[in-house]
Each structure stands twice: as C-alpha cells, then as structure tokens.
Image 1 (spheres, rainbow, N blue to C red):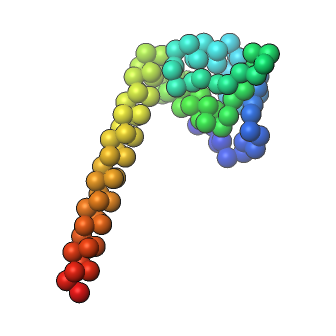
Image 2 (image 1 turned 135 degrees about the vertical axis):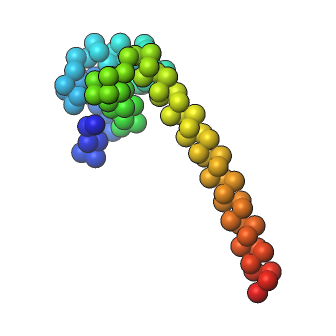
Image 3 (image 1 turned 120 degrees about the vertical axis):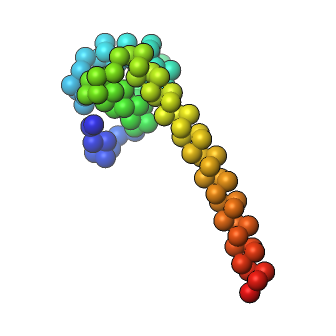
Amino acid sequence: MIKLNSLTKLYYSIGEVADIFGIAASQIRYWETEFTQLKPAKNNRGERKYTKKEIEVINEIHELLKNKGYTVDGARKELQRQKQGKKEEDVLLKRLKAIRDKLEKIKMSLD
C-alpha cells in the first residue's frame, strides 16, 4: 500500500494521483465507472479534484487489483463487504458502550 501520511495538499489532480500510484490517469477514470465509492469533486472546468479520502479509496482499489490479484468485480464486492463489516462493527461498538454504561451505573449503586 502507498503511504498516505505524506499527503499535504487538500486537493490533488488526476495526474498527481496517477503519479502517486504509478498508473495512467485513464485507469483512475475507469475505476470511477466501476466503483461507486470513488466520486471525486470536479471544478468549473470539469477537472477532477481528489481529497485524501478519495486517494485512500484508490489506494484500497489499487491494493486489491494490483497486489492481491482481485478482479474488478471481486474488488467491488470486497469493498462492499468491508463497508458492511464497518457498519456492523459500529453497531456492536454502540451496544458494548451501552452495556458498559449500565454496568458502571450498577457498580456505582453498589458503592
């Protein structure tokens, strides 16, 4: 994976992003048609402007396709699976926090 800690600008052009990953800009434009998670903003002239968040998505797509050998369809499904897993994780975390709060109240009532 590419180290994204060194990104300092708010927005990057498609050429800059392509250079970061060593791929063609056309590859990124194609990924935009295949992955709903990738929707960069465009300026008045229609030029794409990528934030760190979009670059992180591209990084994940690049990792799945180029390094892990996924097909585009497989990578799309994996990203959706990860998103679903994150939602489930968030629900579980909320439940655990509610349980902890109840246990703390019980503990305080016993003191």
